[in-house]
Length: 324
Image (cartoon, rainbow, N blue to C red; front, side):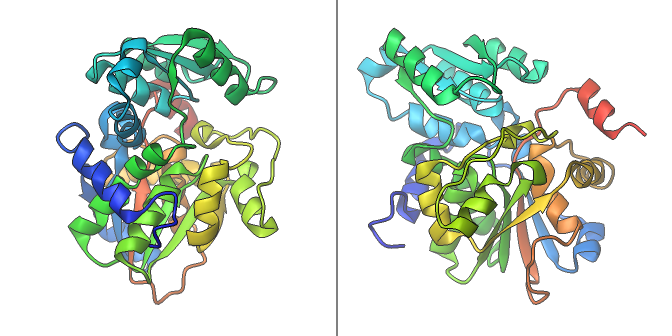
């Protein structure tokens, strides 16, 4: 990776050293049935089993831990639909500081309660009428807090990339890596790590059909905004890619696959029934694309990694989504 990159393989490796012993080194699952359905060996990185139930803790802890003592004394702020909120709240608690989190008022109750449970103050807004970036920045400025964005920060991106770094360290060479895409931080970090270690690997992002802002942006050659998506994949309800994440993904991604809500449900059911693991809708989109053969990968891709990015879903919501 050229040194001019905003995030490099070295940054991801440094983040791995920083979060070591704090973040979980999550397991990699295999399924013979999955291999047969996909037609390849599939290695499933279970970030649904990460602390706070999602990959977000990696980037949040890496970023918050690098703040100065003066900044930590004042506290941190973040805006998030749920998983980054919990991650920043827990990272703040681990590092002895406080957190104020801006969350959409329609955030699943389980995520909002978990965020407050980690000790954060929760402030809500209407995601369909309010600009969370503007509101979050104003909130942080008004209270003198250090703002930790969900993906538009090199330390956050580097931290997220440690999931792919661990996967490749554990299983070796991969022909392809399939990763859910929301704001683009997970896949930007993952692609940086994966292509830094395996230059020939293909990295495919997956978005819900209702929120295909990254796909449209890559096709247009610049960032494109879409209406705020209405999808069960609430963690991927971004309306425009991040400026920093898009600059990385535009260079490193090999394609974007789209899946609808029914395919996401099918993947959640498969993960539960066949792999005995619970995945939230946003966390299941990569698996959904593989099961539905929507990745566009060459059949010659024999070893494929996929990241299950999160598992934060209540039993009631899980049952509602998968109820017959």
